[in-house]
Structure formats: structure tokens, C-alpha cells
Image (cartoon, rainbow, N blue to C red; front, side, top):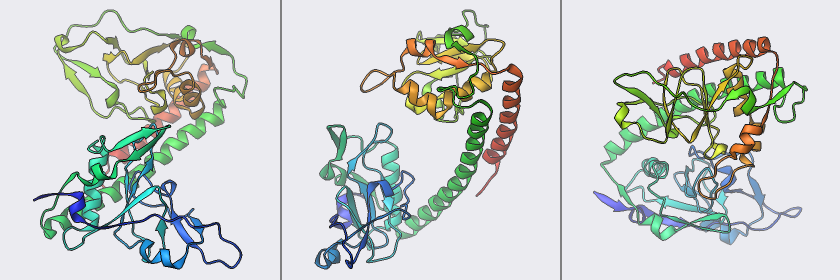
Length: 370
């Protein structure tokens, strides 16, 4: 049976802030939105301590199973409204006024089951109509949010779903931590070998990107039944990993595309802060939101792709963007970017190191944690 979120909530816990504590005052840890994570767990390591009147605390304390939802904030990367599951000690913590704290009715729905359902709805965009934006801050429309539907199966089914999703979440965290460590290792080695590519701290020779890279696709393509079609949503932010491959006949290839092969680096000019840089492993057609970069013989494409993924380059190119809703990097700035040109032998050494890391990454992806 389908219900509204409001039907399965016992109460909304009012956010508290209190006062800056003075010497001798009792203090209470306050959970703010910056203590909450998009993965759904709360970071208790850096909570703000405030003095709050005891009379207010009685109704403001959180209990295990409460759901904390970002009520005001949002970023250009994430809309407001993500949910966290409170699993801390009872009658010890409160949340501030920027958090919507809900206490599920455990006689109707398991709090953890509701958490997983709300998390899924947020990540799939079901709450996209639940916020408005004023002066750069997104505010959750609570009435609209609470009117959204939720499914309530039997407790046995809820328990089965909770166990399955909790196991998957734990395994994802393990795998993601391993992958993050490998990514950090690549970035660290790049900085160690080449320094910051924006400040050129090691004073390498430089060339404008348009001079050391061919910046257009291939005019002639082979005739075949199916072609790989690469769109932005198939490229993972940060790593450039291709998440899935789509194939289609030539009559299904749109006009706003170009042909590439394995010698290219494909750079996303749309919302450059998402940091999407792909290294294709076979020929195909790509959306023109990707910029084709075919490095000269003295530029290793793995080196170039890693350079374009560095935090300093992403921050620099993002500062050139224009467009409010769908910002795009300035093509003039991209063409004129002075790329560092270390010796090709050094670039190749780095590429060999990345290849070894990629093998470790493949093992991590392939391993079955369940």
C-alpha cells in the first residue's frame, strides 16, 4: 500500500542552536549539514558544541532511527534534500535549524527502510520539485517533500531489503575507499614528478594546448554495422572511467557528434567542475560537448588526461566558465592553456605507473565482496 511520507512520521524534531558556551556551561553536540554526508552517514568527529536550555533539549534530542534531511543549503553539485540516518546515542545530540529531523513511526515502517527509500528517491531525482532557490541557497519545500509517496511492504520484506542494501552499502564503501586510495596515489605521483601544472612549479617548457594537440575529430570513419556512441553521462567524474558503452547504427548517430579513435583524450567542456576526462579504448562517435584532443608525439595522452584532472587545472578552467544553468568552459581559454611539456621519457614512466595502478583498480572492480 502506498502512503505519503507524512503518514509514517510521528513527529518533526525542531532544530536548536543555543548560545556560545561560557565557562562552566553545560554543552550539547549539534549536528549541522556539514556533518552530514551524501552517502547517508553522519560524521560525528567535528560537531559544534553549544549551550542549550534544558527545557528545549527535552523535545530536541535525537533518538536512534531519526532521519536528518538537509533543509537549506545545496550546491552546484548536489540539490538540497539529501538524507542521513541517525545512529548515535539517544538523548545526547540535537540538530540545527538547517536540518529537517523526522522521527518515523516504527509501528508502521522500519526507520532504516524509510531511510533507504528516501535516499533512493533523492538520488533518482524524485524530489527535484521540492526546493526553491533564493540568493544562491536552495530551500526544501517541506510540505511538498512530505507529500511524496512511499511504499510500505510487510516488516519481513522491509527487513530483507534493509539487510541487502546495508550489505551493498558496506561493500561499496570498502571498494570506494580502495579506489580512492589508488586515485590519490596517481595524483600524488603526478605532483611529485611534474609539480603543479598551473603554477608550473618545476618550470617545464610550455605550449598552448592548441599547438601541442589537434583539437578536432577524424573526418573519415570506417563503414561498419554498429558504432560506439559516447555521451557525457557515461563518463565518471574524477576518474574518467567509462561506465557503460552504447552502440548504434550510423543512421542513429546525431549531427552534433565527431569521430575519434584510441589516440584521443576526450575533455568535457560542459560543467567543467565535474571533471570528466576520458581515454577511449576503441573508435567511436562522441557528443560535441566533449572536446577532442589528439596529443602530439611528444605528449603522452595518459599524462595529458591526468594533467586535465588535477585539482588546480579543474579550478582554473572552471573559473573561465560562462552560463548560469549549464556552464561551459571558455574554448579560447582551453586552446590557449599553456600545457607543461616534461621530457617524453618522464611522461612515459608516469604512464607506465598509471597502467600498473589501473590493473589494481581492475582487480578491485572485479572482486566480489558480497
